[in-house]
Length: 114
Image (cartoon, rainbow, N blue to C red; front, side, top):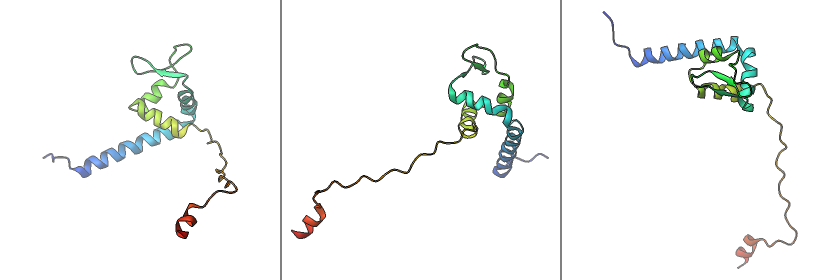
């Protein structure tokens, strides 16, 4: 007798599927890192059948099938590219507080004095 799937079994199934996808991504991360950089640079695009192609030569990329097997949608690939491209974020200096101009009137002191 087959039972109807419950919410818990659906959650488990989704979680196991995502874990498997993350493990596969981890195994092939070094192969996909140049793909992520190329995506962020705009040097690749999605062809008519969903394959990743170079903009300059229009040839299929070597990792196209791998990326399509790991990432079910282009949005998933783009999100992974944004996170895992391997480029270190640029260090920015802390914002400098604007110096007070000399001779400015303190409006709060004027209101309290009145």
